[in-house]
Every structure is written in C-alpha cells, then in structure tokens.
Image (cartoon, rainbow, N blue to C red; front, side, top):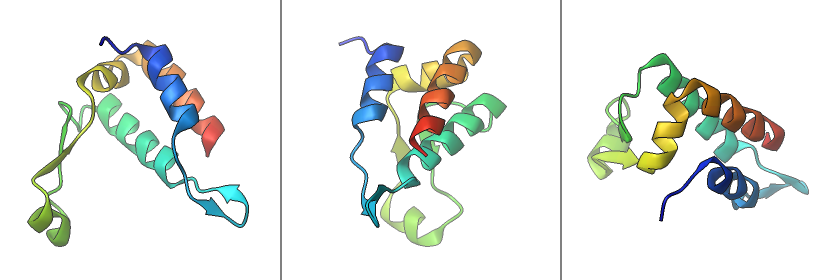
Length: 91
C-alpha cells in the first residue's frame, strides 16, 4: 500500500498517547517533531535511526526504523511543513 501525506496526517491524529491529568501526553508528537527536524537538517540520512549514543539502547536495539514513505515525506520540504503543522497541533 502506498502511504501518502494524508495517510500519515490521519495516523498522527489517531496516534495512541497516554493521558496525563486528563490531557494527552506530548511525548510521541515531540519525538516525531525531533525526527522531522533531524531529517530536514540532513542528520538522519535514511529511514534507519542508529541508536549509538545511549548505551542501554544500543545494547538492546541496533536501530529504529520509520516507514520509507514517511521518511521521504519528512525530507521533502513542502510535505515536512504540513507534517510539522499537524504534529504541533498535537503537542
């Protein structure tokens, strides 16, 4: 299935988040915003995110991976702006 920007905007909207005092926790949208920013800067160069700086994570996981389609949208400036706006709404 090809996933387009509308797919991810809907997925962000439906993303399961913990409740903190009756308010949805911002952790997942903030993490996605950080990843989006790193993709835009060119720090993250593909959809594999190497977990090299935190030893306990490095010992348990080789890398984290996001959908290739989402990565492609994150590195495209126009779609990244749309994704960022949606994620900021959720924080």
